[in-house]
Amino acid sequence: MKTVIKVEGMMCSHCEDRVTKVLSAIEGVSSVVVDLEAKTVTVDHADIVSFDTLKNEIEDQGYDVIV
Image (tube, rainbow, N blue to C red):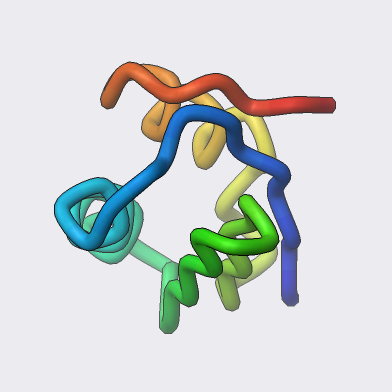
């Protein structure tokens, strides 16, 4: 399954690394691609990983998920 999430507040490679690390740690996530210019995070994951789980992990890092 692939989910694209619009995220506000990511501005640098540190932000990219932080979001990639926290989402990659979720069981069932196989890949994470952060596009700073487009302000998106694309996550390939198993069906057991919910959008809310991804959203909460991103927001816990201090970024805003735009729904």
